[in-house]
Length: 130
Ligand SMILES: [Zn+2]
Image 1: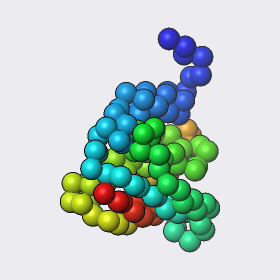
Image 2 (image 1 turned 90 degrees about the vertical axis):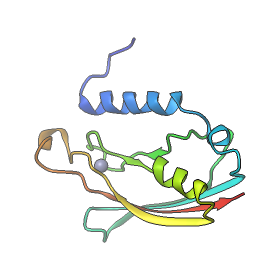
Image 3 (image 1 turned 90 degrees about the horizontal axis):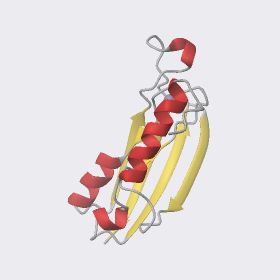
């Protein structure tokens, strides 16, 4: 085991990375699903400043069913956005489109652990084809 990068942020990202790696691909987990496009809009906790918007088609053969996206706050500790449950529910209900908003539950920085939450926002739209 390489444990050269210490600190709660590196440790958390490493654990989460492993969790993603160990999960099934989307293609294996959801065999009915033929197409998935994500539209992501990141913003600050106030929801005003849009920091980034991305839209892309997910490669179902490679992407993993632990379906998470990193928080854009470079200092964020134990946060990020996990849409695994939202995606599973959408597929289960055969929805063609789901949208929502998730709030990062991490800490704003390592100096504010246990005091100030990150609370960055990710608005998402998942477009699904079967
Ligand atoms: Zn965060």
